[in-house]
Length: 237
Image (cartoon, rainbow, N blue to C red):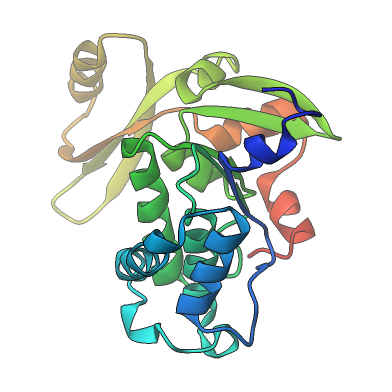
């Protein structure tokens, strides 16, 4: 579709969740959803059914008649996402959806986002939480100074930093003394583990953990910045 001449038609396919909610404080949860459907031209016959379906899906049915201003932060975020889905968009843009939420609210929202993929919705997610991007995204773009410096799948990005996979072996003695050793491995992790055990020198095997390059390793390599600095600039923890 043409971005200039068909912009109204294009908008009907797109849902947007801004970092700061764009819903109305004085309207109830139900009325906010209905108003959004009106804006996008959803037929009147679908308003009630669709609004109640979204409220149930986002666990907000009990808050149906509660003004937006009276909802908790997590509920406000959930309703904002529900409003972006009110017209059945093919694409949804999520701008920092979990910033400032408590652990349980953020976890619930991530589960919702994971479910969009199964429904055939394409999600564009901006986030400064690298663990969130690694968990949710099929492809990741790293942006530095307004420019995309890397764009690939998670595994594709990790292969670009030339960091070896490793296993960390924790060994222990009967007196409680522990010793940790790390070993690089390529494809054959079993032979590497056998080599580690041959050099255990009287220690017992306590645990074995694989250590793989993370998306944070990729970010630091590509941007030259630490993720802690990035979160601090965004007011994160």
